[in-house]
Image 1 (cartoon, rainbow, N blue to C red):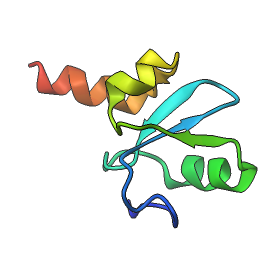
Image 2 (image 1 turned 60 degrees about the horizontal axis):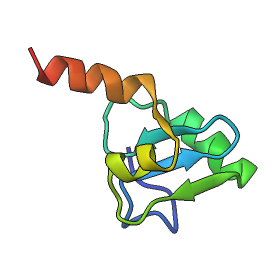
Image 3 (image 1 turned 180 degrees about the vertical axis):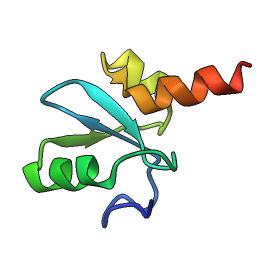
Image 4 (image 1 turned 120 degrees about the horizontal axis):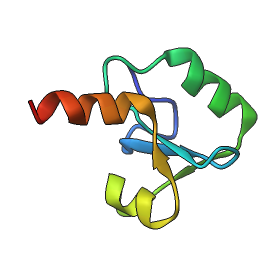
Length: 74
């Protein structure tokens, strides 16, 4: 999936409404989710751009991130 405009340099983007973080580099991520998030203008990026930083701010990983982590641990 290509990254949204203004987010070319970021891997993780969070939804302020649901406190869910998405990994823009995962191939299984539904583009419609990110399109809707960008349209809503209720998103956040993290500095540093890491999953740990998103978690520190109270965001939970989207199921696609958890599935990717589970498949890596096999």
